[in-house]
Length: 142
Image (spheres, rainbow, N blue to C red):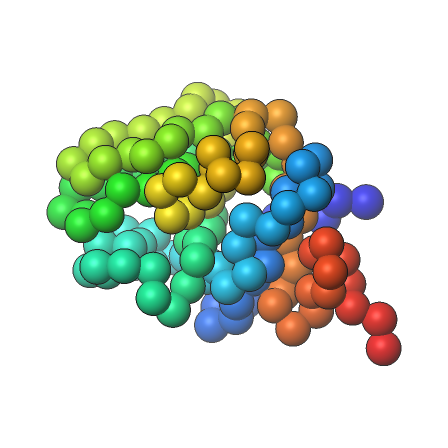
């Protein structure tokens, strides 16, 4: 069963693995969570690159902007079950993006990753804490 975003996710300062179970590829192995107003508002604003992370999950978040940003993004708009509702490729700085009322969270990724992995609307994502994730995003066995 695919986990939906919920109480367990609301733990800051942890890193996350995001796996596209539809395509069988990892999107992120070191993503971070922005689940407060301050963290969502700051997002990737002051970054010049993706040096210590490879994704940012904004929860809740139905639209984003890249005002003041220094790098382009790929964006996945997700519903509560982590199914991709819409994607935006190579969103340049000083732009807006939204995907409608079904969106509950947004995953920001390095530009070009969605095309490289073939990720598209309708794909199902799986989210795991970094320490728990094994191959394919599944829980590691002891």
